[in-house]
Structures are given as structure tokens and as C-alpha cells.
Amino acid sequence: MQTDSAPTDDILEAAASRLGDALRTHGWRMATAESCTGGLIGHAITAIPGSSDYYVGGVICYWNRAKEVELGVPPELIAEHGAVSPEVAAALADGARRRFDVDFAVAVTGIAGPEGGTSGKPVGLAYLAVAHRGHPPVVERELWPFDRDGNKRASALRALQLLTVEATSAH
Amino acid sequence: MPTDPPSDADLRDAVRRLAPLLRAGDEQLAVAESCTGGFIGHLVSDIPEASDHFLGGIISYSNAVKERLLRVPHALIDKPGPVSEEVATAMLEGVFERFPSASIALAVTCLAGPQGSDDGKPVGLTYVGMAHRDESPHIRSYVFEHDRDGNKRAAALAALELAAQHAGGGG
Image (cartoon, rainbow over all chains, first blue to last red; front, side, top):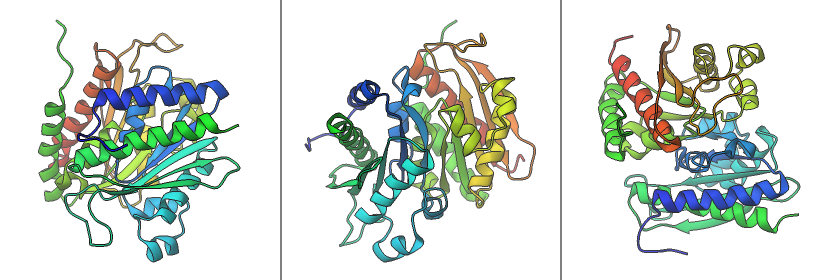
């Protein structure tokens, strides 16, 4: 799915529009839990007129304590696996779905750069997760090659796409 | 006379002006975003110098989230309505409660359009709030005349400028 350049505003908006169509079909509602994307997913979703029909809101959990307090991520999970991990991504999505009492939630945690990378967790690493009521969360790992803004955009686009796939295939 | 909405460069410049003020005051910022949907968080988290002073926030797109997560009183949502000075003030109080280590908060509630509100408020009506913890809030109101994206951009810029105006020890 990777391309040479990071997604533009137009590409994000088109993906958000497709997501809206997928959710509307079933009358589903969703929420977001964003760490490294900082609110970009919510911004893309709310670019679509009428998105209040399916988007209720989200938590921007830049601060790790917000992951714990607002979204119920166990502190031990962050201590053991780190904030950028598949376990924490899944817990963020599941926590947001419960906190907002919605059908779906999507979460992103990653290292946007330029600082903060390690050999085990390089800049560009991102974990995306989708939680659907009654199902275990789906988690995906990505490693983006862009600058800070580009890595955020790539994660936001993939989050919108992943949620669209899950909403389209769900019953 | 109609003016152009803020460009990406205008918004980045506003974050770059805010960043040294946050650093000088050793401030920690949290945001409560309604119509902007996470856009302010995205902009702040795009600039590493600003993101060091950013905790996160609540995207309270639906009124239910304003009430449940930000503890905006239901009576205020009824009257004067979600797009009002009173609700912007309550959103600031709510986000300080959610982010106990925040020293500064921003809140935005607006009608981005294209639809107006049931109570006849105009598209583009925007309330932007900024406060230091335990101090009186600064609230500004506007009626922007752009499209949906332009109104979100104008609201985000107004919030960032209000923060810069008062973050530098202007209390």
C-alpha cells in the first residue's frame, strides 16, 4: 500500500468519505484514540459534512497518563511493551470503543519522528488498531518512510482504510 | 470583503509563534475540540518544539461527549446551545479536569457548515476559549464566512493566536 509520497489532504478526505459511507450503511457510530497522529484522524473524518451522524469524538492521548486514565490502558501494559506496541494499540482501540460506547473505534500509536526512534522501534513505526463491539481488536504494524508530517498522514490514511475494511466486512 | 481562509503556512507559523511561549512558561497544553475535530491537536503535534508541551485533548464532536467527558451541563447544551460562550467556558473547565497536569487549555466550538443549527445560529459562528488553570478564561467569538474546511482553519488559527496572546505571561 506504500507509495512514494505521503497522502495529501484530498486523499485523506476521500478515504474519510468512504469510511462515512461504510458506517452510515449500518447506522454505526465510531470514536478515535490518537497518539502520534495528534488529532489528524478526527480532523479528516470531520472534513465530511454530516460526519456527526457517525463520529462522536475521541481522545488525543499524547500524554501516556491519558492512555491509562481516559482509555483504561493498564500501566503495566505500557511499562512492559512500551507505548508504541501492538498491545497498547489494541488496548487504546478497545478502551475508546468502551469509553465512548460506540460500535467501532480506531487507535494509532507510533513514532512520527524526527526524534524518539530506537533500533528496536525506529522512526516511522506505527501500530494501528480497530475495535469492533463483540470482537477482539485487529492490529496492524506499519513502518513509514516519510518526515514527521508525512508519517502522521500515512498513519491517518491507513487508520481510515483499516476501519473501512472492518466496517465493510462486519455484520 | 471576503478573505481567504488561513493556509497551511499560516497555521504552521502560528504554532511556531506559540511554541517558544509555551517553553518559556514551562506550560503544558490540553485542547477541547468540537468542530475542529482534532485539527488543533494535529497542528500542535506537527511541530516538535510545540509537541513537547502538548498533553493531548478531547475531541467532543457530539453533544453527548461534551456532557460525558467534559462535563458540560446538559442545561447549557439546551440553552444557550453547544455553540456559545458558556459551553466554550465549560469545555475549558472540563479539559482541565481530564488533564490534571495541564496548565493551559484551549477550547473551540463552532458551526463549520454547510448546515446551520436548529436554533438559527449562522454557519461560521465560532467561540474560541483559552485559559490558564484557575484563572478566568479568555473567550472570543467570530462569524467566519469560508467553506467548511476554511471555517475549521480559521477557528484553529484564532485559537492558536489567542493562546499565543495570553501564554506569554499575559494571564
